[in-house]
Image (tube, rainbow, N blue to C red; front, side, top):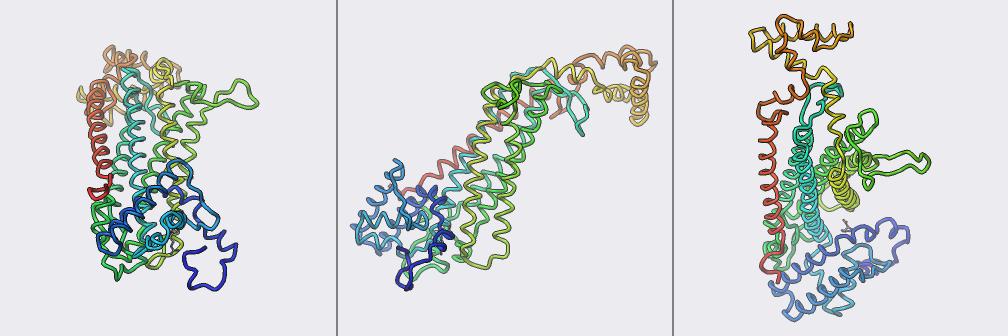
Length: 471
Ligand code: ARG
């Protein structure tokens, strides 16, 4: 049975049902659909459209459906086009005639927009908490890393030594921006569309402010056309997740490189690696590779939705149903990626000796020699040229740089000391720099930032609880 049999003389063609049905994926909105319906029923009661008794019957039926959903007992029937239809059908089975009043003053257009906002808000808060959990692991590993250092790279060429802690925290700070973005998106989407109806509001005395408050929203829509058309919040969520995915992909790529025999900077725990079906010796970084690979899919979801929205006339159009699969998939994929990477980083073994050998065995302290000369009055460009010449000499004549530095009248012993293991990194003392003192301060600042973000998340998840009317 469709929701519109009055107007139609024929059954829907099977292929139309196959083409338009969304119950296969929008069933994840069941909990939020029930929350939305409870608020709507209370609103109808408050406006006198439903009697107290009818409100009780409908709320009891909604609660029972809620239990069926929670226990995995809720049964969709083939005629259920979407989750909204399925729940209304079941409420009607349970509540009898009163069930026919559930949809009073409401359209699936404001209903789905409401459900999706509540769902999105909850899932983004969870995603942000997963990001914080990964940041905690990175912070822990940064603290464990002590004074270990490795070459920092630009253009994938060894550039200057940096503390391993500094490197790990670089990723953690990028993730802090993701948390910030997710929170901002949640705050911006905190507007209830319920009461907008199909597109124009209602002739019945509905109270959109009341239902907004009941659902824990900070505000109601300002314009009913916009309320049912707006999917900015989905696009923003997909952007936040895509960029988060990009950050995870960059972390993944480094682990792929670092775990090669060529780099040898780390070994993955067996539990976070995979083997080969043919090559017995292989240990593969599939988790890191998928962290890298999933970013493509997440970017695709954002692009797909933007193209769907582009050029859509006001107000609701069925195209908008295409918002759900990318959003649901993006949330699921990024959540598992975050948890898998947290496990990977918690258990990975870093080979400090290999990292340090790579940093020491390179020209990564060359700029320190130039800066040593600068401190003695040599203009930087001249100092740069002088040290560059020594590096060229060292390469062409196969003489260690330290020997050439030692022999140079302007550098001598003091210059050669700068090339000793660990010296260059210890000299990166400026705020936010890669040396031990700066990194110790950075660890403190990052720890504070994590505390602040945990509190912010606690506050918005508390606000997310339904308001005082939802007893
Ligand atoms: N499944 C639909 C969606 O996701 C629900 C709204 C249907 N509204 C309508 N007028 N057909 O958008």
